Image (cartoon, rainbow, N blue to C red; front, side, top):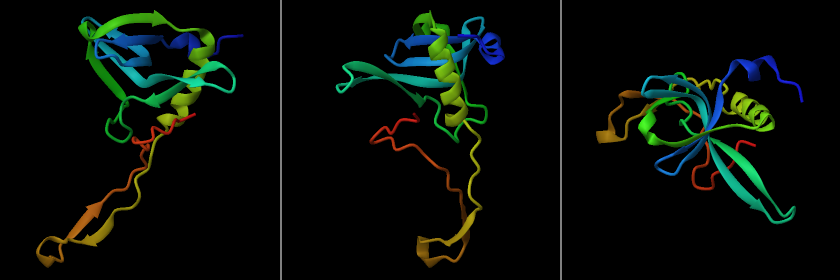
Amino acid sequence: MSDTKEEKEINVKFLRLVNGDDVISEVVVRGRKVDLIEPMSVVTVPNEEASKTQLVLYTWVPQGISLDNTATINSKDILSINNVDPFIVQYYIGVRKEAYAPIEPSVPNKEKSSLNGSNEDKKVLNFPSQDRKNKEPIH
């Protein structure tokens, strides 16, 4: 498998955090601070049909909240940091392109306020969101 230019230029790591989260992310270390660029939660799911375990990635930074899809954590919050298999790096790069693709909010709607029958206009921005209850995977 040949490395793409993007794979060579980014530092992708698997991190286990002290809170139990497993995260795969592009990592930039700045002293005691660690920037996680477009981090994805890693969840393993048993696949009983194939008698194997599947790897599922979810956005770790809620989409539409962070302007740059980056989280900065303190290095003391990292339990372990590991290199990632090149195949998984390719998978992560593909998933993050889709998961963190720029979203465009719908045009603000004008709705009547339900408070005191007021006719004041309020702006509502509708963002697509992931079904957190069922944890629908990106891939």
